[in-house]
Image (cartoon, rainbow, N blue to C red; front, side, top):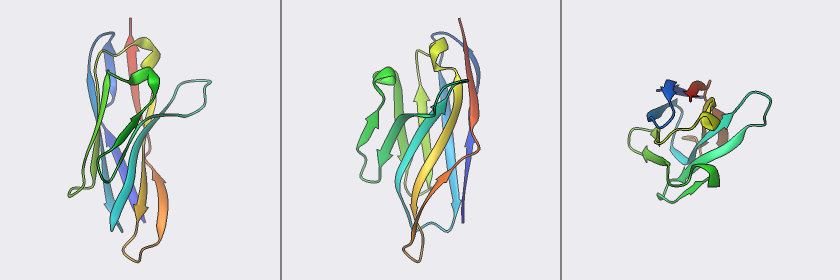
Length: 120
């Protein structure tokens, strides 16, 4: 079993910045992909950014140039630096990890979510 704990959400004015963190713990051999998703009220959950174990990353078009994903493979931690935030970025942000366990089985895990609210 693996637990993901997010932190760093909060309220900020438009143009401000926040840094989200995700700490993974438990039965982890490696984290293949660590990603951030978000879900706004009344909308489907969507990919914000994801980073593969080798360091390559994908971003949603809506956050390119404003958000930066990073990870610390040794610490099993991931980060999302969010700059120039807009009210449209308001959502619950979730960390997701594609984990290979010690016995080499593989599972997807989600964090509990952290609220990000951007006011105009």
